[in-house]
Amino acid sequence: MCMSFFNLKTREKLVRIIFKALLFYLVICWILFGVLFASRIIERRYFYPLSYKETIFEYADYYGLSRVLIFAVIKTESSFDKNAQSKKGAKGLMQITDKTANYIANKLGVDDYDIFNVDTNVNFGCFYIKYLYNRFKNMKTALVAYNAGEGNVALWLLNTELSDDGKTLKEIPFSESREYLNKIEQNFIKYRKLYTNILDKTKNIE
Image (cartoon, rainbow, N blue to C red; front, side, top):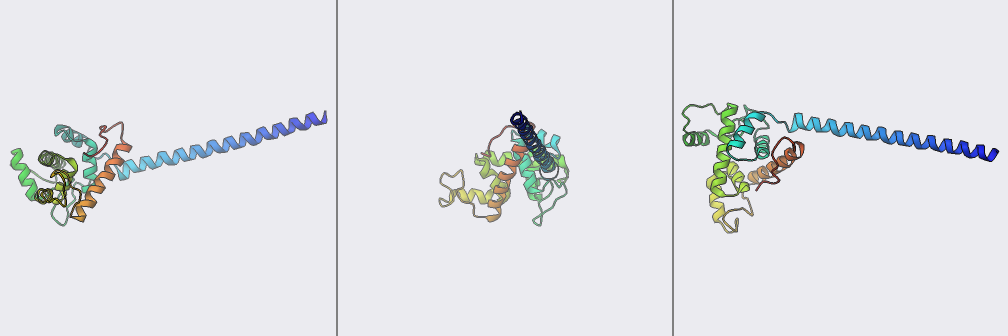
């Protein structure tokens, strides 16, 4: 009888220990889930926002470009500051210089425009990326040209030390452009991961 009572108390104690361990495990899981959920919200809102979503969707779709890509470019170029202006005179969300803006305006038949206007800037930027892609037939090359200038990239592609096929660059001479492309690729991966159900399903920058 004593032995049976002892075994019963032991089992009850063991059950309490297991229950407490499971409860502790569940609490830890909920805390971790809360931290991960909060960190994702913070990432989305403050580091990788969908600012100007409607405008970006409109022009990315119009020019047949990946929405993920355009968000990645704008994040890299201006971090969504519509009034951003670089030391080299690049302006707005997609950092377009006056010279490039004038060229694009002529192509689009636009006489009067404000390059800091969000709609205009995104329209011009998407047009120019598409134009560069049509010229170089490779998106990574087009993005390097967006940063380094299409004239420089055209010359680099003729250099067998920099390009094997005249289409892609195995080496980018400008360190700024190398870093630029790397940032776009990193931002592209982040946006694709954070907004898989909102943005398009583009897997890579091709």
